[in-house]
Length: 301
View 1 (cartoon, one colour):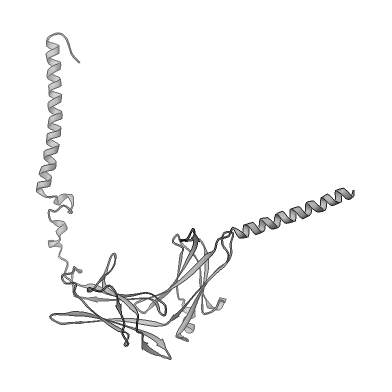
View 2 (tube, rainbow, N blue to C red):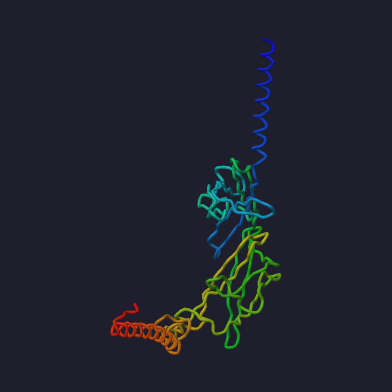
């Protein structure tokens, strides 16, 4: 009996140790989740936050989708909740600031965004923070008969007033489908002590809309203090689009098939006629050979 009791105790201890080791091994297999926050302002009126979930595998970061993220303003609490979201295929979750937090937003010049994700079977819980200062970006233009220039000014809100923000890198140019086409020779400009920068516009003969309008744009990327800023302004500095003079309607290699160059049509149809002419000639020769064989009483086919 004592032997059986000892075996039972040993069996229970073994099962407990096995279960404990299994729990520890499962916890050890969990990956580390990283939450990064980005703050964006477009034309000084659309404010939103983007949370990005990533994990590191063999020295490289990969996006993690379907992670539930809670985003808060200044402190973690239901009264400060911006929203609850799930990351998309790119590991991102986007949220605009709700009207319920407007008074809290207006009460301070500096805010902290907090992103939190609970632990799950694959990852431990994760937290990310971003501190930003309220700011605005303005764009203006000056033009005469010979020169055109773009002036961009960045200000931050501090002590109940707007103050110039210097040493901020800005990309200035023309809005295009692929991004921003730089206005001049420099890729990036830096604000001076007045928070301003002037860029010479040297993009002459740039196509615009039917009225000759183009869209100027200024962009700040991932600034440590103000985040991401973007502003646009429409100006009549382009060449008006004229459908009659559209080069896609001319006979060029990049036009539609109805406007194929004559020389290319001649080559193509010549090849087609030569190939089919040869095939028809061979078929006629086969019929002649068959006819000759039939006349002699022996058909070669």
